[in-house]
Image (cartoon, rainbow, N blue to C red; front, side):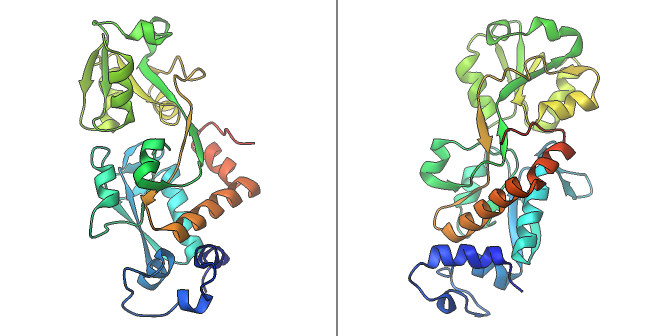
Length: 273
C-alpha cells in the first residue's frame, strides 16, 4: 500500500486535478507523470550521494553506504514503499548530475548546504541539519588557530576538496593562505593529521566525527563556526510532489523526535526547537 505521505504529497501537487488521474498504473510512465508516481511504478527511489562525507554519506570499499543522510534517504524510501538505490555523484559534478538528461537520480543527499544560488536553478528541501564552516587541525596546534586571521597566512597550508562550498569559502576568505585542493574529501583529515596540511576547511557536521575517531585532530572553533546554515535535499525543478513529500517527512521527524535521535546517533548538533 502507498504511504499516507504519498497521498498528501500527490494531493498537494495535483490541486484541482482528480486524484485518479494522478495515480494511474501505467507500466510505462511518461515523463509528464508526477515524480512520486513514476518512482512508485518503478519501485525504486534513486538517490545521488558523494559517499565521501563522514558521518553524513560514506561509501565503504565493498560498496555499502552509511551515514546520517543515507538513513534519511532510506526513511523517505520506506515511507514511499519502495526500495532505495544510491548513485555515485561528486561535489564538482553535483549540479550537472542533478540537471542532466536523462535523469540519473531522483534527488541528492548528504552534506548539501541550502543556498540561494542552488535554489535559483533547482529545488531544495527544508533543512534537516544545521551546519556552518569550521576547521580541523592537529590537536597539538589547536591554540594556534583561533580565528580566520590566524589561518590566513602564507605559511598555513589549507586543504579543501574541489568543487564544493569549502573550496569557495577558502578562496574568498583566506587570500593569503596556501590553498591545497585534494581530490578526495575523506582523505583530507588524515592529510592534516600526518602533517601534509595544517588546516582543513569543513563543517560542524563533519568535524566532530573525525575528532572523535582520531586523537591527533582537533576542531578548536567548533562552537564558533564562521557561517551558519542548514543542510537539505537537492532535486531538479518540476518535482514539486516529491519536494512536498520530503518536507512532510522532515517535519514529522522533527515532531516525533526521530530526527533528534538520528542526530544523537551520529554525534551531531541538534539545532531545532
